[in-house]
Image (cartoon, rainbow, N blue to C red; front, side):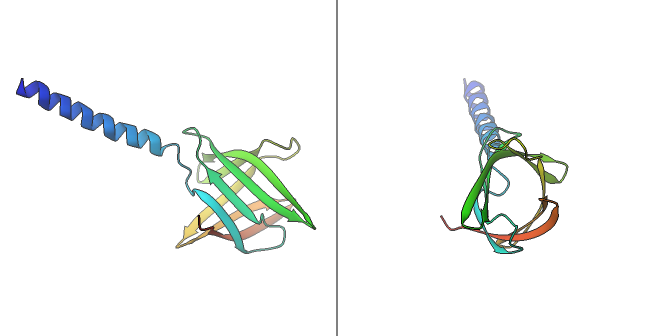
Length: 127
């Protein structure tokens, strides 16, 4: 009887650990909304990373063009050390490769956009 109870607690403990690891796999690498603090005018003004399936997370990229704000909605997956973003709401945009590096509270993204290589620094928006 004691062995059965011990085995049950061990199985429950392993199950809880596996569950939390599985649920963590749905979280993006840099969750939340990040606002541009340094970079060129052509940088996205904000980027948002949201949860999604294990290998594919949600993302939103916003850009200001004159008085117009454009939102690019999509998803990203990790390929080697880059985030590859596929845009869902516009057909003519090729996947965007984001180089990423987090330093303290800032996120440095490097990417090519409209033929220009950009380095843009973002800070997490407080929730």
